[in-house]
Image (cartoon, rainbow over all chains, first blue to last red; front, side, top):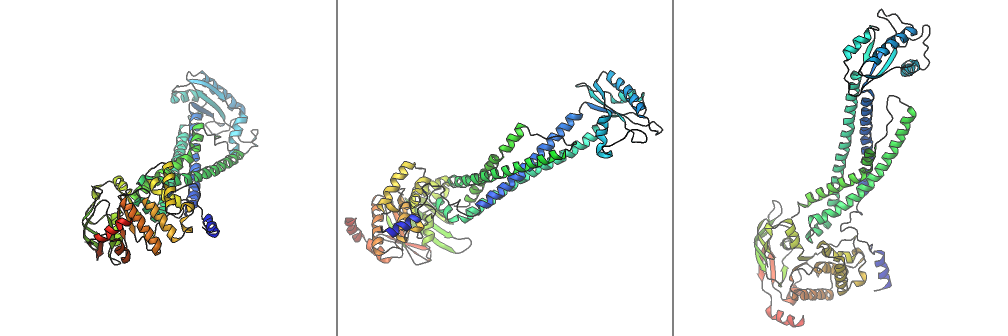
Amino acid sequence: MSKKVKKEKSLGTAQKKRRYDLPLNESSGSGFLRLLIALMSILTILALTTGFVLSDMTGRWAAGVQNHMTVEIPAEDKNGNVLPGENVRALSQKAQEIAAAHEDIESAEILPEEKIKEMVAPWLGEDISTSGNAVPLPGLISIKLKAGAEINTEAFQKQLKTVSPMIRLDTHESWLSTVLRFTGALKFAAYFITLTILITTIVAVAGAIRSKMAIHKDELELLHLMGALDSYIARQFQRHSMILAFQGAAIGCFIGGIILLLSSSMAGHMEISIVPEFQMNPPQIGLLCLLPFFISLLAVGTARHTVLRVLREMP
Amino acid sequence: MIKFEHIGLRYGIGPEILSDVNFSLDPGSFHFLSGPSGAGKTSLMSLLYLGRRPTRGLITMFGQNTGGLTREQLAAQRQRIGVVFQDFRLLNHMSAFDNVALPLRIAGKNEKEIQGNVNELLDWVGLGEAKRSLPNTLSGGEQQRIAIARAVITRPRLLLADEPTGNLDDEIGMRLMNLFEQLNKMGTTIVIATHNQAMMDSFGHPRLVLDKGRLSVEEGSTELRKKLQGVF
């Protein structure tokens, strides 16, 4: 063989390592699928985390107000006249004594004026004056019930009204159920979005596989005619899809993680007191870390199903 | 061994390409398949390598009715058939070695056995030095030898070749025919589709002649066969 021919042949020398019987990694569309899976993974991780945050918030809110009640002593009498601060404090003291003496109550604590100011600050501002013609502040008593106690709220309210007919007992149930219903709906939406993204990923992978099968129709037919089992051909696509999906999902989850860290840091700077600080628990972190593997598995399953279905049309 | 009974084939709702085709091939036989263009040779070949199912009739292959076989059984049957396509149908992303090794890998042979057999066969067809080359960097004749090596690497019971000498000069064509004769002597049943009248006359094997979808069998020259038996 001449040197020239040898050189030409060496230019076309194949890779020593055999990779696929079908040139799947050479055909177009692989980059697109990887990008698509990366984007889907970002959306999945964000939607899933939103679901976790809402779950956590709901749990904390429910736990925070469970077994708790608040007694409010309005700073006005039944005729609508504003009561001086000393009177409110005296009424609060009497109500606190009644509450503390109740058998189902573990503790009853009068909230200090500073704390009450802090609570109304979002509506009335930081600098509230309580002297003279300034804004009258009510008295608030935070009550914690004994574990498992089922207090008769009606009877307890009657007892309190002996101190002042204006006293109100707030069990938090009304607003809590509304908030829980609302967050429950949001949580459902977040998980539904996650499911929709995963279904979209399945459809996209199936479409990409079908398109690759169409591109490599001749090679596929050749393998089929050589006696390759459907599962043999499917394995080629499974491996290809698994690699692409894992790469895409790993990139997507990494970017999603960065977005979460950024948004968590931004939320931290906002200091929104109504939203409890969120920290994912180990199972939730584990689930997010497993996402690339889960998406790869999903891609492998989809590829197998699609290939076997298409091959079944061959004789 | 291979039997076609009342075979008919049509594509979609079109006319019948093959009509009432009947023939049988004994084990170790050698046949030429001839006929004018459009007579249905390629269609008949596709039925022989189980690339298509007939629209009617019965095909018995290696003692089994192919109509009743499962997909796995059909795949196993196909592994017993070697095919040399007219356009070679080599996989251009794979080296010559991997192209030839492909049927063995599909059959699940171990890598050690594959290395030995493929290297030996590539040396035999004179492509030992080009085993790492990609097919599209090789000449037409070299590509054809790879296609033939791939078809015979599994020692098939039936070897089908569609115009195998079409792209070759007379000398290489004759060497190729000698190779087929040797394989036939080892017990492989061979069917070669060709237009080459001179080649058919030279070898004297029986002919399956297709014309307008109908098949007739012409006996070969026994005298010539006897003479050739002395040569091969």
